[in-house]
Structure formats: structure tokens, C-alpha cells
Image (cartoon, rainbow, N blue to C red):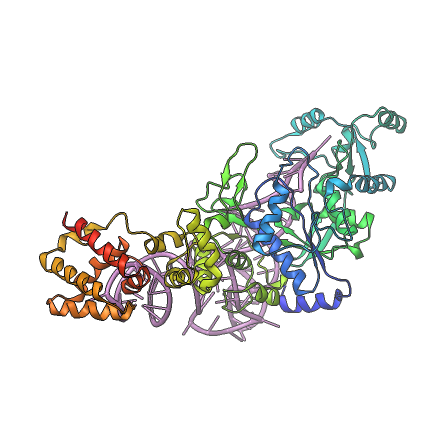
Length: 523
RNA sequence: GGCCCGUUCGUCUAAGGGUUAGGACACCACCCUUUCACGGUGGUGAUACGAGUUCGAAUCUCGUACGGGCUACCA
């Protein structure tokens, strides 16, 4: 399907008369990974582009998997990334509550309606009975039997049991679940905004549980009910949901009407080195997978996030946006405003994308290079302070940042790249100096010290001129003493121009460092 | 196994049937730089395979292969 005609058709068929409303609906079970943040991003960009609302809904219907702190953590991640919702459990909104655990009663009513209309039924099978069914029906051809239209006839449910027995079981508070009754022979199809026409045969879809024995809904019921009640117009989610979409479509048909159903878009997966990125492998890839660091409250295990690794939020959303989307030009660096302006769901790729950490680093480096020193100042200051370095003068810090930012891939690189501005080097790269050290150089630096001591114009270009004059007078090539001078001030073969460094650390400190290094070189 | 989705340089991707298949990351070389970077120039490198439709296919159709996802009282 061609992207442009497609977009035009959407415009005609779905005049934007309804206000655009989209949602991100995570379950608070742990760290928020790359794919999750990208889903947030695409939701956010789409909503802002169409002057709509972005809603955060917490899908906490699985009490067994609930993790304390995970909800607050999700808020923190969205705040850091600059993708804050318009409505959420925290700030509220017209369509609350936004936590599914607080909406339990609502789902029960819809489940009851489905039963009344014959689209769902009570199932009394115990977990042990289900396990036995899977074991008994397992064959080579069918390694994982489902609770489907053929199997349900052999199980204990309100379809197979006499009505009065069902009544009796219910009256006795027997544990039960409510399952959808999938039609035996129906083709369910829909038009996905990214992949076009997709269809399924209901005969091969199982009777999914809608309401669990603890009274909580499963995702399948909750997503449909809440998307309707919260007036969601476009539903974006990961491709892993595609196989259960027929269940959701049928529920829409039975409950609220297909005309009111949101437009679906199933986003391609972000792959790690071995398939789908997994939260559980968070630490094993050699690169972060979570937006921010996450500590598992049970094991105490810490997984470092992009933020703590030293990524700028601007770079993070930029690289995520480009993982599966592009604007058709060769532009790769986008601000958030540009993304809002240019994003379109039709240009999202349908194929999965393998995450490339090298490219991610490039994006971050680009963003660091483009930022003004003043913008990076507080981050760098916090970094240095955290390492015990007192930063007293913002003007000098800004000069330092401007000098070293081209050399920093991560925010955290600012430490190694600028520590010598604050502290005399503790170690010298002696291999770069000693083999070629001689008396002439020794004499040169002795004279340089005398010259510097009398110097009243401590500007980089003056220092450079003086340096070269003394070299010439001593019949030394400046190049032969420039590297030793750098090692004296920095400790290693890296960093901005030496005279810029000397200017910033000042006359006194420069002379001290030369003297100190001279001892190390000759010792 | 079944169902669904996908497949252009190693990676992310462009290319509305007609291009020497373009860009970016990474890699290599050179230039700039008396350090390291930045920057600049150039290079290696791809339409999975097979049929069909067409004057002409990366592009449309079918098949095959490969990859991924789903197949829970998880989301």
C-alpha cells in the first residue's frame, strides 16, 4: 500500500472531527525499556501534531507481578524524556481513574453484559484441569493446545454444564473465569495504520480469559473497555499484540460498535542482538535498555539507564524516533518540535529494527556538540561535584565545556576530558616523553618557567608566541617541546590546545605543574 | 506444530515500475591539526531465492527460504 494515497484516504474516512486521544498503557512491573519509550514517543508526537491528548493509563491488573515503585519510576522516565502526559493517575483528568486496579467494578459489568448476550461464558476449570487439558491434548502436530471452540466442549463451563448446575456453582462461590466465546468460522479483518489490511480466522483463536478468578480483568477486556470509556481515537502498541487483535475487535463489535473503535497501529519491535529486547536481560547487552536506572526491589539488582549512562534526553528521543521512522529526507537530527511537526504514522516502518548502540552514541555526541556550554553547565557541574571537584566559577566552567564538548560522547565523559583543569595530573604518560628527553629540553623548560614568571599578559596567544620564541632561541623545534608541555599540564596525549589550557589554569598553576613534571621526567 | 508479521550495504534506512540503487552509523585511507578530538575528501559494502505480470520490477503477484512475534486466570 502506498503511503501517500493511504494518508489521504485516512483523512477522508476519518475526518478529525473527534479530538485525537491516544494512550500509553504500561504495566508497572519494572524498568521502562527502549521499545516502551518509543511507543510513548510515537503516541506523544501523534497527539501533539494533531493537537490532541496523550493519556497515561496504568495497567496494574496483575497483582502477582505488581512491583512497588515502578509507577513512580515510569513518571520519572517520562519527565526526563520530556514526554509528559495530559492525563494520568497522578494529575487526574476527566476520564479517571487511570489505574485499572481502581476500575475493577466497571469491567465486571461489561463482562456480565457479554455473558448475557451470549458472547462470553463462565469457565470453572481449575489451573490443574487446564494443565491436564494441555497435557492430554498435546501432540506432535499441536504442541500447545488452546482452550478453543473444539476444546471448550470438553471442559467445565457454562456451555457444557446444565444451567442449574452452573447456577449452583455460582451460588456456592466456586472460583470461575469469564471467557470470550470465539466464533467458529469468521474472518476478522481490519486496516492497520502501518501494515494495511490484516485478517484472522477466528477458528484458530482461543477463548481468551476476560475476567480472572480474582475479579480483575485481563488486558483483553480492560484495553477495550478503557479505550472506549477514555475516548481513545488511535491505539498504538507493539507488534506483539497483533495476534490478539481479533479478540479486541470482536469485543469492540459486541460492546461498543466497530464504528467507534480506535484506529490501530502495531509498531515494529525493537530487537536486541538476539531478538526481542527483554527487560530481564537488561544488563547483559553491553548497552543500556532502560530509560533510567532501575533497581529491582526484590533482588536489589541495579540496571543502568540511558540517563545515568550520560545520554541527553534530546538525543534519546531523537534516536528512538529514527528507529523505525524517517521523514523521507536525509535529515537525522531533529528537535522535539521538529519531530512533532514532521512525524507521521504512515511513514513508520513495518519491519523490526535491531538497536545499534554505536549509532545511538553518535546521536548523543551530535547533541552534546550542538548544545551551548550554558545548557550543559548544570549537568557537568553535578558530575564534577559528585566526584568531589568543587566548581566555583561558572564562566570558567563554560569556557572549559566549550573547549572539550567535541570530545565527549557521553555527559559522563566531561569528567575525564576536563579533570586536568581542576587538578594537577596524578600520572604522566612518560612513554611519550622520556625516550626523547634531553638536556636541551630541560634547559628550554627552565627558561620557559623564568619567562612565565615575568609574564603579565596571560593570554593563550601570548603564551604561544613566547613559547615559540624561546624554542627558536634555544634552537629547538616547537614541536619537540609541545608534547612534553602537554603531558606536564594534562598528563596524557589528549585535550584541547595546550595554551588554552594554560590560560585557564592560570600562571601560578602552570608553573607549578611544569616544575612538578620536570622532576617526574628526570627522576 | 499452528497463526500472524516481516525481509534493500554489518546496522538504521531512501528510492509513489524507468536512478551509475541515495544517505547515516561503524570500518579503512587521505587532508586539516606539532596531542586527542571536531571538520573535510574518498573508499569497501545491499535489493534473500525462484517464477510470473510488464517494453521495463528493489517496487506489483505467487511460491520457497530465512528472521521475528504470539500461542498464560502476564502485559
